[in-house]
Amino acid sequence: MFLKSKKTKLMFRIVKNIIRILLDKRKLKLVSETELMQQKLILGRLLSNQQKLLNIEKIEDTEFSIFSQWGDDGIIQYLIHQIKDLPKTFIEFGVENYRESNTRFLLCNNNWRGLIFDGSQSNMAFVRQEAIYWQYNLRAEPLFISAENINEAIKKANFSGEIGILHIDIDGNDYWVWKEISQVNPVLVIMEYNSAFGKNRAITTPYDPNFYRTRAHHSNLYFGASLRALCVLAEEKGYAFIGSNSHGNNAYFVRKDKSSPLQNWITDFEKGYVRSEFREDRDAQGQLTFRDWSEVVPTLNALKVVNVLNGQMENL
Image (tube, rainbow, N blue to C red; front, side, top):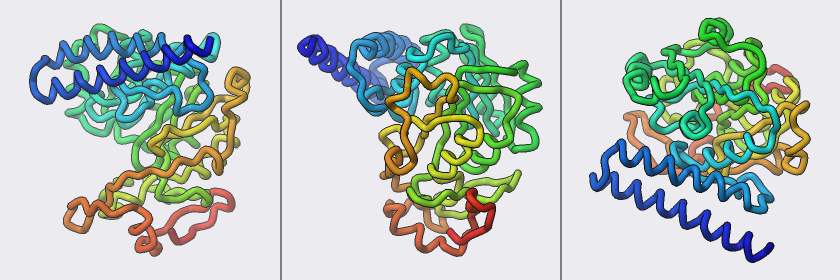
């Protein structure tokens, strides 16, 4: 059994390396975009099947990337195979042109029905012109999401009740939008968190329906919510926190009535926090400084955040 597990892990690593080689070939224009997509899907299916044979101990052990920026494709594949009778429907916010997203592999590999939103009309028009828009049951809607419009937008797209996955990544009002959502009742929720807000504070940017990350502060570090704030909201909404991806930007939650297959993964914000190593700070001219966020955040302490434990406004 140990030998089998060792061989499976080796195969898992080999297939992930093949995907990296394919991406390098695409950069060198040795394969077409269509060929790359087809080959990535085939290799993704191999990884998903190999994953079922692994002895998974922690969330990062499941990671692989087909269309996701980081290893979230693998996490999602693992989770959907753990929960029985999971509705094959998803909603994802903030997908840009959907070429790099956390639900595209789910759509193509598992044939789920999906609804995606992005604030850009051109991004959604791009998706509608792609072959996946007729090959799969996907709806792409341009929308600058706010707490006031999200439930009506979901209803208008004919999504309601229990769904498999809700994924929110809008670089701003993430906490407030999840708090407001009632039109759907997702089993799994994936939330982007702001690692730069630290491990211990339960804070979010104040609600502003027109919030735009770069306009709020040129550093691009003032946005969204801390992991602890999202864990507090998750508890209020009946969800358990099961961990973060290894790059420290996405947190995973499971609805408590469906959590029994994942009991060993349930954790708290202290143990589940992963520090992001992103160096995305920008100066006032919009140029990357490549400074670690720990150097920048102390200079932003005049900016206001909401402590979700008491509702009070505080300095960052």
